[in-house]
Image (cartoon, rainbow over all chains, first blue to last red; front, side, top):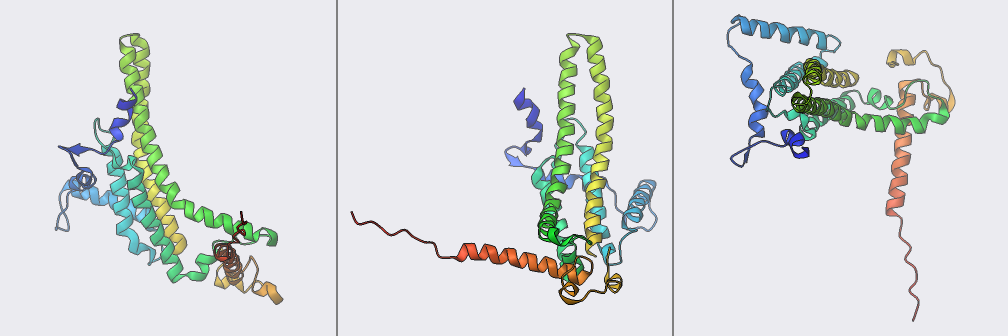
Length: 226
Length: 58
């Protein structure tokens, strides 16, 4: 039972070779591209959705922050599509791996922080001390703010990993419970199945929300530093 | 959030002009001083010579 529960999170291989790179690159194939200004319906819908998210997310940014538009849009589309594809049965979800989420979070956070220190040194440094702090609390608060700064990328990565992994585990467990209860008590199995349906709907929402939260937080770190 | 334009509303004198938690400059100086102090402490404990106990003749 234990082995079955976690085997869906192990790195997939094909004839002994790891195919994780192909799995990470796969969602890009699902989005059609065109060199025409006005294309077909699918592309128009895709452009409309991307513009909607882009305008909402980049509205608060200065022109310097808006240079990150392509990066942030790619990020949200990648995480959202990866999470949604992971809800299909027997698929591998890269965002359940902490290594991949750390690989996304740390460079983006570091890029924003380095940008802030490079172009707005005084403002970036003064962020470590909230305005109006009593004198006796200043050293302690600076240490606390430094720790909270360095925890930001860890929190970003762990939040995404934990949410997606927990959701998948729950679905796996409740699905197994439904199957097991089917031969014992059909009515209980039906209730468990309804719970599974509701959980699946929740996981759809969580998949999109976690992508949005990740990208929004990166965008906020960028906004603080530009 | 305090900015350069808001710093002028605070009129500090003496050491508070450079070390306070209201103006950008004051906050920056406090942060740099605290970080510098911690760095000096770490360096001191790392670089101080370790006292080896004298070996007793048997």
